[in-house]
Length: 268
Image (cartoon, rainbow, N blue to C red):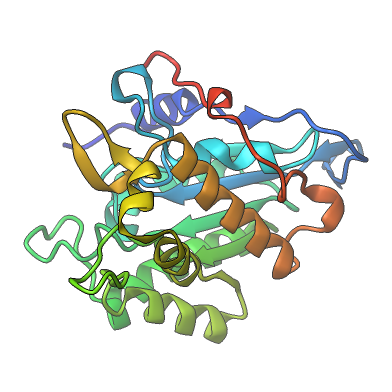
């Protein structure tokens, strides 16, 4: 299905850029008119990060929890969409929408890989060391051309354990390809795959069920519920701080509990 730019823009607006309340001094970029404005964190990705709506609850994208860890006045514009790969996101014009809005001083965090591996689907498949990197370069180059800072993130890991209770990686060469590209391009890299699989290992087989979308009718080992989304968002923001994409004044609550009730699912 081909989408018009108007349809894509409408869908992006439905994802609701989330202005977040917090405490602490604001850190703003200069606008063309000289006024100060708050930086926006744009997010391009797949269903693990996407905004979810009431009909999908309790499924929760980790992008929904990012604002809890960012200070007052920060904004998250979550353009992640279910089922997209680095290729299909671009082919549908979704990167164009982001690049039409993004401004100098903003950030573009990019997480793809889950659907790039769909080898039977030519609309989504990319090969890790060639086309996957080629598509990721388009996000990097597009952000840089507009004075924004690109950030690559490896895909958050699924819940998979072997018979001995060891957390098992599921993303093949895609994380390594993203890491290599980040080094080549001089881009900040958030290794969320490594951090998340280490977290699942610490939690273990049974406890991880409390972080994924396990319900009475569904056992989903890819998508998160509120605790899982919060846990992954905490990893992401912690890495943004560690990699000096964000400063200490830009973040909050990294060591605090976040109530599940803070997650809400708007009507579609």
